[in-house]
Image (cartoon, rainbow, N blue to C red):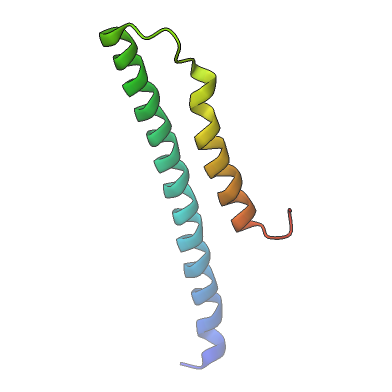
Length: 77
């Protein structure tokens, strides 16, 4: 089989792998955020902490997301 016939297949496979990695990473980030929120809510109910507020939670995830997006798109800086 000539190399020319392999190129479109390789490109399609690489594209599918990249899309899967992006989807898996986003799912992991969403699950991590849900776990963090759940853990804090459980802590609030158990220990009655009133000083922990939800907006503090979103900062680490947003920083990670921002760094991940800027790493994926080096042109958007």
